[in-house]
Image 1: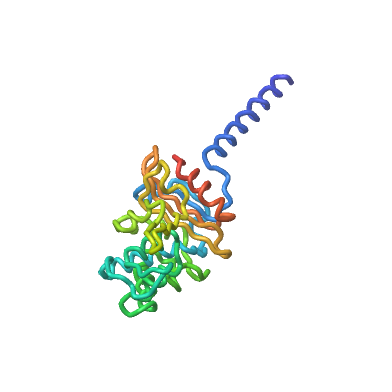
Image 2: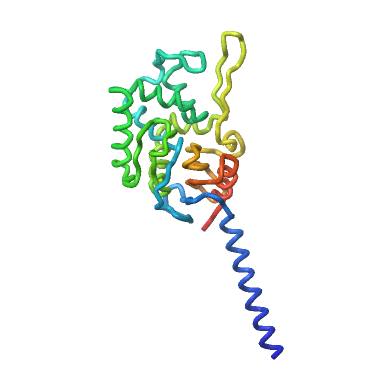
Length: 252
C-alpha cells in the first residue's frame, strides 16, 4: 500500500516537472497567433499560425518594399509637408518604419508611379509573388482592419524585407531626428522599445489597431542564432514587445 502511494507520488512529481518545463519553454502570452522561426524561416514553435488576422501597421513593411522596388530616388523630396517640413522619400520611409507614421506611408504611395491605387496593387502582387496566399492589402498604412495575413505568411514578408538595406537600417534606428528652424530637435522614437538596446535587429515593425490588437514582427540576432518572431493579437501595445522578446529566446 505504501509502495503504491510512493509510486503515485513519483509519477505526480514527474508530471509536475514536465509541466513546469513546458511553461518555462513557452512563456504565457496573450497573443492570439504567434510563431518563432530561425533565420531561414523554419518554424521552431507557434500557435494558430495559419489564422487570418488583421495585421495593422506591419503593412508598412510591404509598402516600403514596393516603393523601393519602384526604383524612385530616395533623395528626392516630396512636395508636401509632414511635421512642418518638406521631407525626402528616404526620411518618409524611415518614419513609416520607425515611428509607424501613417501619413508618411500614405505619402510614399501617393507619390508612387500611378498613385496610391497602383501602389496597393503592387503590394498585393508582391504578396502573391512571395507565396503569401492568405494575405491582402487594402491601404498602405494598416489603419484599416482589412489588411490581413497569417503568422506563416508574415515569415515570408520578414524574410523578404531583410534583403532591403534601407529597411534593415530603419529597423535599427532608435529614433528619427532633424533640426528645426528654431534650432530645436524634432525626434520621433521607435515604436519598438527594444531597438537601441543590446539587440542587433535585422527587421522590426510594430502594429496596433483595436481590431488587430498588439502586433509585432522582428528578426534579430540572439544567443541561439537569428530568430524571427511574429506576434498577432496581443492584449495591447504594452504586452506585445515583452512577449515577443520572450519568444525570441525559445530554442524549441
